[in-house]
Length: 174
Image 1 (cartoon, one colour):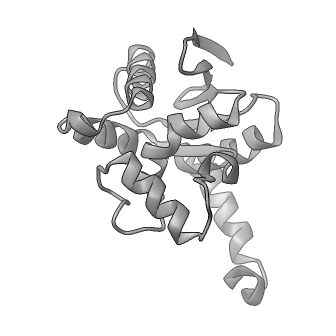
Image 2 (cartoon, helix red, strand yellow):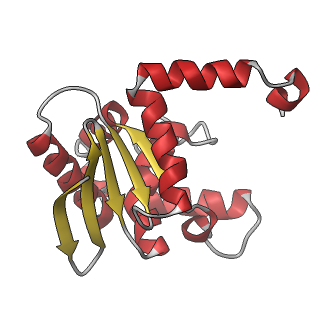
């Protein structure tokens, strides 16, 4: 594991690590900062809400929709989620499309764009995976790293799919 960058900025304090080739982790101890840094790309990648998945969107619209959909008084995304995982091509597409509409870019988006730039300085081409964690020594890291391995390591993916196939169908469907 190699540290690539540390930021002690006013907005987000983080460290960017290359965990192994093609797998990068952004460690942000503060859960609010971590969520706000990742929310846009994570929802672009796999939002359960079709109006946000694969699209650029106004963060305030998302925040309001999230809050009302879950019938909450507050925007609880920042405490509902602990870790994040995004394939590199999704992150690049999201950031590229977002920068075409600068009216909806947030300071967190700019920071994520900087992180993407740091990754591409280390690995100019090829696929990669980015995870967001509280610590590189946590259960969140272990969970998100499994997502990254599934995406970047064909042998691991095959082994995990084999284990899933062996599950009782009732359990697997749940």
